[in-house]
Length: 500
Image (cartoon, rainbow, N blue to C red; front, top):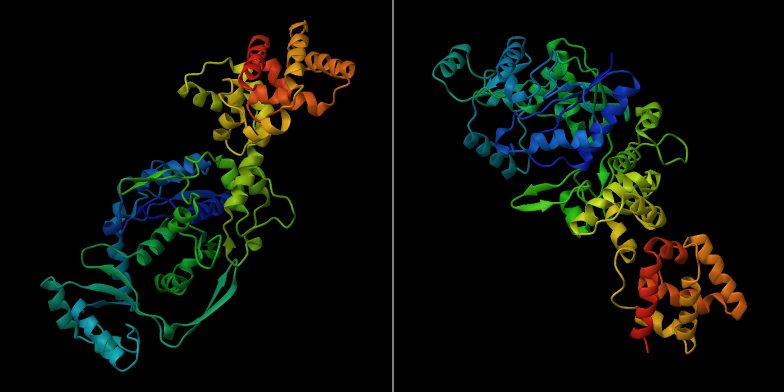
């Protein structure tokens, strides 16, 4: 059975790159009828940020990436916070020491710094590995008696992995194919510290094994750790999961990985939800008015495509089509305008009733009370030009309040010498129209224009100016029907008195 995990660290807001990693894990699991787990990797307590864990959970819930096991959904592999699993890691560190795959290292920070300086003076780079480990203070260079003495008196130590010397390690990646590396170029990573806390590498492998993870799908930045992780599985005698390293999400312009600073600089979100940091609130996609479905659709196509030109996919369609083999190796450039396009598409797909309910919240804050049926009609007329629900007010405010000024350029161009006469005659036509509907009103005004031999440009722009204040908005007669006869006539009289 396929089992995958999303394992973020609670060190701040969840970056959009992490969201895509969670999404691809989720899609893969659901495609194969498997489980999607959430594990919080909080072994680095120095970088722990209060509230970050709950932020991660809230973000996944908002996006619809429901996990099957994890924090708050305890299963047989609980607990799912690494800090709560701390007691079990030492036995695995001891196992590696006992079977010769790891060793105690007692080197102080000062001693390591001195070694680095000595290498730099010779123009070399110091690496703690096969070439240097026997000259340093560790259980490989010390006698067993000396090691035991140091442990007994409580000397600080770390447990380092004993990287094999001169082995050409061949690894398989589901996205990148075969990856080869010479282990002699790698250092002996720290796995465990004498304070009882494991490093990421040990905890990650132990937990993946104990939680029966079958596929590790993670960001490209973890590719350099793959040799160590593969070797750790070998050292324990465990079957390694399949690995897949996702391409980076790149900056919209220039080179490099998309960062929080890019979003601040260019004015777009890089977090799923709002996040407060150092007293400053950084807006997320949710706070900016994006729909979760739009963000999911956009992220799914960052580095993956189904092999055709289609772009709009529901979650169910993404699950059906998703294939790790169709994920690209190259980085995917983040396009802030494209995510807006997706949001526009999803806004159009929503019902008028759903959009009207969202718009009503803003109207209430403005002290405007309008029947839901009317708001739905208004939304149906303006939503085609909107990207966000927040756009509705600017696109429709003339439905709720009369214009307080008129576009000067439009007035200069459209208000002719005979315009006041035409407006007065249209007022009379509207007053005498018994059925005050868009269709009936349009027919009455068109009959008037034919009778008077007037062109469209002589009548309609001045009418729109009177109703809206500028030359924008939906069909004029739809506006007239919705604001009603009394308000329409008032606005026409107002513009006559305003423009002399």
